Length: 147
Image (tube, rainbow, N blue to C red; front, top):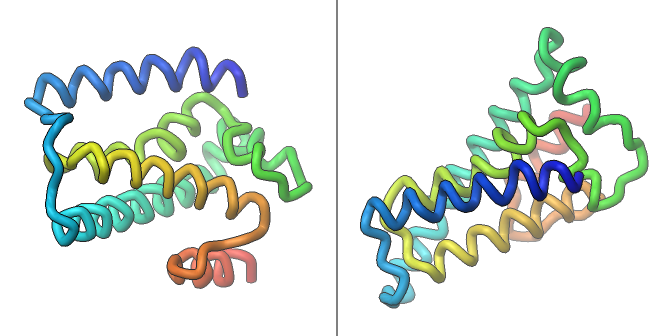
């Protein structure tokens, strides 16, 4: 997990930061409340879709044993297992989904932070065995995947 955080997460965040600056990201502006809700809805939708399909891909028998099996070594539902994974899985399932929504358009800093916080909380809480009340998609997906 430390390898993922230091050698994968930090460089990925730095690349993301500099690519947003290169695109002309404005850090100091504040949007209207309605615009934040719209951006947040789109970011969470993109994040959920990208995570779901990347996670489904990791369960493909051809790559499961090489990449995703490490994540399933823990059978106890504890939050830290959300980031206990192969570096490739960490990039495509943990880091890329929230950043794709944010970088798909010029999100404001409040949307950026809220999206990252939401992703971290929902990812950790789903591995802990609880879900948010507002995220009905997680409840339905977990029901159909676990049956």
